[in-house]
Image 1 (cartoon, one colour):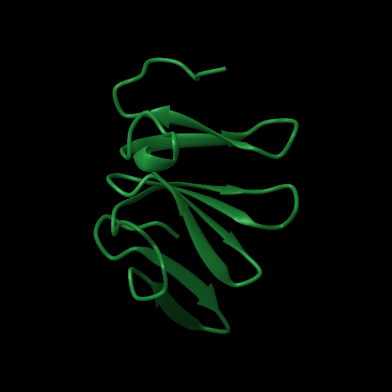
Image 2: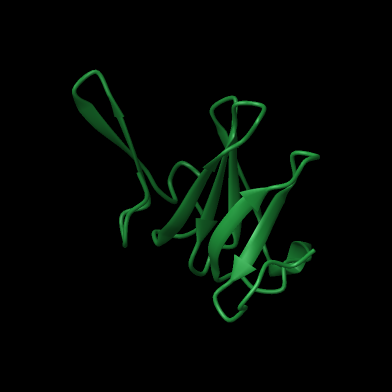
Length: 95
């Protein structure tokens, strides 16, 4: 579950676990979660770009890596398994 300031929450066996900057989530403002076809997780953040979670490890993609903005409000996965972003200021998906 994404939060408005606490990062990512995971609920399992009647307990919540918090994933934040200490675990590799690049922003505490999580906007969208997308389950990847390969079982991973794409995470859109407001200010931290896109995070990926695969095999228990977080990675991030930011402006310096080629994103047009680190403020990402919406994501989808394309047919090739790549994350596609919807920046805050955009009105439609980029191709």
